[in-house]
Image 1 (tube, rainbow, N blue to C red):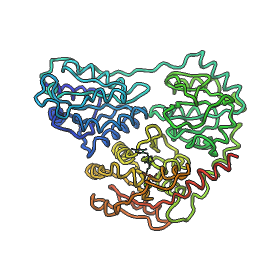
Image 2: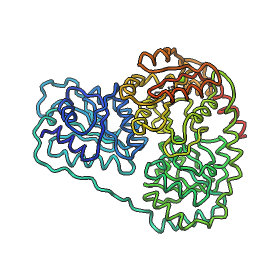
Image 3: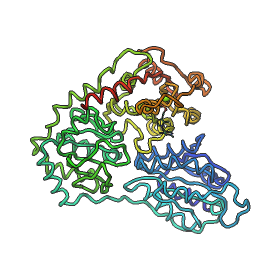
Image 4: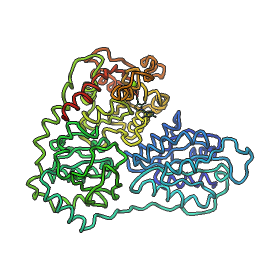
Length: 544
Ligand SMILES: Cc1ncc(C[n+]2csc(CCOP(=O)(O)OP(=O)(O)O)c2C)c(N)n1
Ligand SMILES: [Mg+2]
């Protein structure tokens, strides 16, 4: 057995079944070991997409996704994906090749210090210096990636270490680790605080979306009957409970949901991670904030909780619910605001305008998606509209990135979702800018025979930045571009493509695309004049 074979055995020992990547000659021993293993090598057309897919695997399953690239240029293409997983708290293991370290027959050809590059982008970045260290390093890498706060780790396997005979070192088996539950003193303090609140409100943040938490969190909300809102990445963390949903804080202030936030005297912030654009600003005059999390809150200018309940969130919330259930006469104090907020958010959802308004697009997508259908967003203007207006009923059914907020992740994350859930409808929603950043992965999706629909919102522009440019009073400059004919582009990739030609065309186009199976592209022209009308003019007037 050589180093590469030992590494692959160690990955099998961790339960890895797939690796996403794009190999180079420094990985050839590893590729050969994979060929003879139980692990499937899923080839992508760009390393960045492999990282987005591996990170999304971690996000959706709680188990690290694994990606593989060569040295130098290939490894550098992982960096955006590494940052995506680091900021988004997604468990991922990245394996890269390197020239030999014991001798340097090619001098410095293609050699970049990738461990140094990855250090600030990961929880751990290490070079494997001898095959004997592989079992321990791999176990440590998976433990680090998975444990709270989850994130990416990096292992570099130089080609000579990969080829070197490995000594007979036993693999280290993973074992379950239960996290500690909140301390009774912290539970007492939180109980007292919630019991005396006049207008309590729950906020569900990014960490509320950990796959293992959904049941306990939904149970907590149901038992306490305190209304809740969520951050963008906290969306969908509670199953059901929709009569308590007050909205999503897609903006940091002045949106309709802030009517409730501004009136709350206590916000129970469950799993808030300050990597997200602030869902509200804390200030000297309130509100009081109770942070419930796996880890203590990070203190920021705009987020400095007064009380913290730290520990495994699900069981800790269960204990809190036991103390509080049925004893909160003021639980629903803010509920009367709900109808007004949701009514405003729902305005113009069925307006017949062409090109389509963002509100209509969100509405029609919701119609096409069953409750368990998964929508994966790229980054662009429409993300704010989906965050504000799209209603979720099942955990992790709206995947968006409000942490690195990178363009280009929409299609790869949807590919991963479709691989994990072949029986569910999966839709990628991309702008014409973001789609083109990883459009090459259409070939991957087609090769893998996935069922997947890609909705491209066409405004021939970097719409979001164009909107900000206008809002800041700058002239319109440098934000527009032309596009390929996306329907022909789809055909060239051996898949169906269609273009929405009128206001009522999106819903049937999506329905036909899903019914057809395989990969489909649907192009919808979008009218972004609503950005200014609603998100600036209307909301400024509302805040007065
Ligand atoms: C990789 C990357 N580059 C640039 C940005 C800055 N940025 C955010 S949104 C955006 C425009 C996105 O354009 P498009 O995908 O067409 O979506 P639209 O806003 O037009 O709907 C840009 C350039 C980013 N977030 N990520
Ligand atoms: Mg655009």
